[in-house]
Length: 386
Image (cartoon, rainbow, N blue to C red):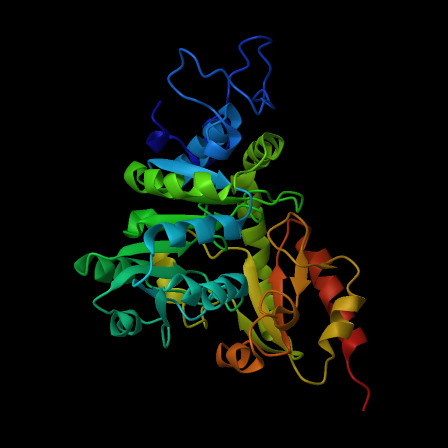
C-alpha cells in the first residue's frame, strides 16, 4: 500500500518502521552501533551521515507525514534550521525573513548572518506584498513560520510560495506549531519544511530533536553540509522519537479539541484582554486558517489584564505547568518576554506585540474542565490588591 493512500494514524504507526527479522517483535529494533562494515556494501553507514538504520527509517515516516520525498533528523530544531539556511545562503546572498518568528531563529540570523556575509531583510508584516517588497536581485531564500511563535499569526503559504517561484527563490517554512497533522506546507508550494521535533513529534517533553523534509534533490544538498556540521541525533533518541510519533495523530487531535474550548473560555473571561488563536471566528487569521490548515492547532497565547500579576498567575497554577517548551501531552504556559523571546530587545518584542502580560499556552490532553478550573483559581490568586 502506497503511503499516499494511507490514513495519517496508519502512517504514524507503521510508516518507516524497521522489521525485527530475528525475533518478530512488534516494535522497531534498536541499532546502537556507531561502526558499520564498509566492504561489499551499497551504503557506508555512520551516525554523522544521518543514515544508520534507525535514522533512515524514522526519516521515511517524517517524509510520508509531510508528503515529501525525503527527510532528515537532527539533534535539535535549531540544528535543522541553521543547517538548512546555511545550505542555501552564502556570502553575498540575501534572505527575506518573516518578521514574526521564534526568538531563537531570529537571534541566530541577527547574530551570525553578518559574519557569514549574508544579507537579510525582515518583512514589515505578514502580507504577501511585504515579502515582495523585500526581494532583491541577490535574494536566494524566503523563510516563514506559520503559525508564528508566540502570537499565532498566519502567512498565506500559497501566495508566498507562488511569489518565490516567480522569482526563482527557494522557500522554507517552520511548521512546528501546526505539525503535519494540521498543515502540510509542501502541498501549498513551499520547498522545504522544518520542525523542532522536540515539540509535537516528541510530544512527551523528554526528547530534543529537529527535522527537515523536502525533495530528494534538496535534501541531498542539505545532507552534504549537515554531515560536516555534526548535528545528528543519537540512535537511542531516534528510536524513542519513532515510538512517540506513533501517537502523533491522536495526541494532536485531542490537544486541538481542548484548545478550541479553552480559547473560547479565555476569550469570554473578563481578566483576559486578548486571545490569539486562529480557531476563534473573531481572529484576523481565521479565514486563512480554514483554507490552509486542517484545524487550528493546540497552541495559543493570551494577555491578562494589568490588574493581574502574570508571574503570580503562573506560580498559582496547580495542574498546568509553567515550563520552557511546548507540545507535550501535559498543558504548559510560559512568558515569551522572559523565555522564547528573551534574547530580543524590549522594543523588538513590543513591535511584534509581545508584551509583559502575554502568556503562551500549549494545551495538553487533560480534561477540559480541570484545565478551566486551574486557570480560574490562578486568575483569582493573581489579582493585585488595590
